[in-house]
Image 1 (spheres, rainbow, N blue to C red):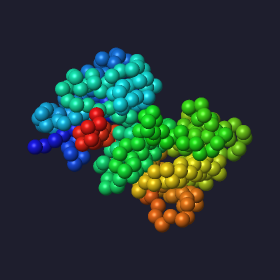
Image 2 (image 1 turned 60 degrees about the horizontal axis):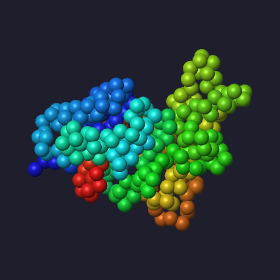
Image 3 (image 1 turned 90 degrees about the horizontal axis):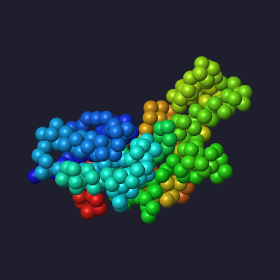
Image 4 (image 1 turned 45 degrees about the vertical axis):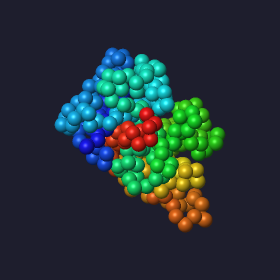
Amino acid sequence: MAAYFVGVDLGGTNIKAGLVDEQANVKSKFSVPTEVEQGPDRVVRNITAAAERAIAEAGANHKDVVGIGIGSPGPMSHRQGLVINPGNLPGMKNVPLRDQVAKATGIRTTLENDANAAAWGEFWAGAGKGVQDLVMFTLGTGVGGGVISEGKLLRGYFENGGELGHILVDPGGRRCSCGQPGCLEAYSSAYFMARRAEEFIAEGRPSSLKAHVGLGEMLMAEHIVDASKAGDALAQQVWDEACYYLAVACVTMQHVVNPQRVVMAGGMIAAGDYLLDRIRRHFEELTWKLLDDYPKILFATLGNDAGFIGAAGCAWQADRTGDW
């Protein structure tokens, strides 16, 4: 008998959903508006409708769907099945989303942090397929991620495990959006790289990036990458600093988790080898020389599908372990 799992990637603007089989093959996928401004009940109805549509579009039988996995922005609680108060889901405060969706669909449901779900997607079906230990960094406006250790998601006692953007890489350093100084996110996120470059320009340092600032544009990470490739010294400093601190975090995770693979995901991987080669070089400079083997540092392969595939994979894992 075929067994299927619905994966739901819950975002502030859209809900991405799909039906996935036990081998992580995608049978259907699509997006619908979240409509969070209409309140929690509307969001639950939209998730429920998305799950039912995923089943119907794949031509699957409802009875063959074993579970639904939902990846939600945090803060949230997997154990309680609760969406607590995510910044990009205003009004979704202390919503028992897992139980509400399970009741509406009649299908067992599990709730997971969206970054953890994406990491599980790469572990189950992407760049980490076939390994047991994986660390994934998601590089975008902020820095997120997830950790798989011995084939299990690392959540921790307080369910804050895997907050990789807040690894301390520079004690007393730049202040992060969380309010603490020295977090990885304060150096290696697209937002803080742009702010770093703007600070240097304000200090009077020469840079081709001044043209963007002078035109009133918002400085973006891609501007820094392009300028760095063209030989702009300021851009090169900002870019190399971002890659260096990512390598510092990779070394830290090597000693804590000892992963087989470290996966880089998110919008910043558009820089390609210009990102990966520098991280690898700094990693080799910083890492423990007594080891015979090191984790492979590579790019994610599932792109924007990692979230819903991983959410479906979390339901697949919940079915195996009983941890819904």
